[in-house]
Image (cartoon, rainbow, N blue to C red; front, side, top):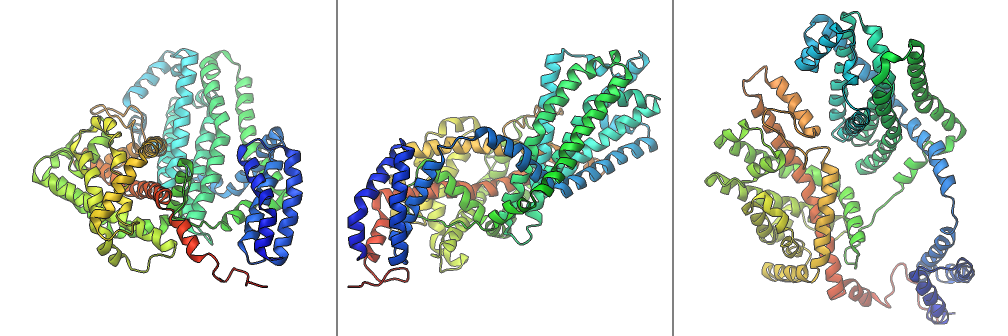
Length: 636
């Protein structure tokens, strides 16, 4: 039978299934009957039409039916037990070396705190602060050395302590993505603090008293910091040591493992907060044997769940040890440009493409663009050093405003604005050049691409960049209603068949207007996403009172304070060095975020282009009926 006859004979049945599946009201029995019919058709197509697309189409239909039948099987409880009893312990086993390394490092940092306090008895004041040390000395005089745990209402104390412990643990994890340096900094800070604190009580002859009081909750709390450190090292090592994977495959795999380790910690963080608020709070009323029992029980739980049980699971299921790694290694993403996509699909393909491009893209960006940003930063700081001597209330807005020329402090800021516009244009062009390269359409080197499209991209970026710099930061809340009209000319400058830059930009503005609602929702989604991802690093809640700690410390606060402490030995104005570090970090974040934004609006533009012009459909019509490698030869 000819393929055309086969299709004509069965297309009504296939169309009926498509309609049934799209309605979302699948009847499992009806789907099962369709599954038998369509798998028979698939079997026939695999025999007689091996190289035709009808075989691929029927294969996809069969998979849809199979999924439709399978999704009616409800096994939520079994799935939960599988995750808790098998999947999670297996992730802990895979990360066992990183967890051990984190423990060794933390013990080393704690030892540094001990020996530093032994060498200099005033060292705890440097680490813990004069106020805390003086308060503890007063409590010791009054015969209640741990009275600090009795100062607040128990419920409010529980909420405050648990929130703080969650913040510290998740910061320790997220810091691992910065080449694990941030994780070690936070573990160093907590380890030195612990060693100094315990040896301080030893000097007062109260080591056992403090141990039995503090480690009631400290067993879970300190263990959580160590395990969070192991999770951060696991995540960061994926980027540092990819092995036989691509760097992005390795990072995805290590990030999943680190995130699962962090999720396993959440119950223990809450339990530590509960014990500190309701048990340590009343430590003087408890007999010593109960304190020892609680401490030993807590360490036994941690030892069993994070050392012994994962090894038992690994011995029972040895085939699962490398399963996830092999699945990740086999993944291959293919970017399809012209396709009508929903908002969710646009977001998904943008993330996938960004991860696929990340290694090559960041290499190019930091070779070509970052030096420009660094020069601009140094020029601005040279001409306006007064900006470096201030602690800013909203640090991130103020520092980016200074970097990009938004302060409008003379001709130098005009230079800053032009320089950053060029830097952003280069970043966007590099992103789009690599997109064309991975889909096989780029036949020019990067310099030829810049000569061809750079001017148009510069013109497209000009208006939104000028708008951002001209408006005060508080007005950007209202500019969100204007930006959707200005974004699609940027990808239109490259992915457009118009002959001149003006015509390309004009089409981009037209498509921006026709897809305004979608772009507006994407901007809201992007804002929320950046808030969640960047908040632990340096973002909205980095609010500083002058010469005081920020309302909510982030990783950049930790790094800047750490650098400032070192700088104070070499300069009378450590805040200058601290602010330069902040500007450097904000520049890096900006160069990492802009490519993702570019991809997000590129796929929005391509989706709107396909909706308006049906480019992929026209392309299919051109090749329709031609004999190609995967096509069956016409037989009589």
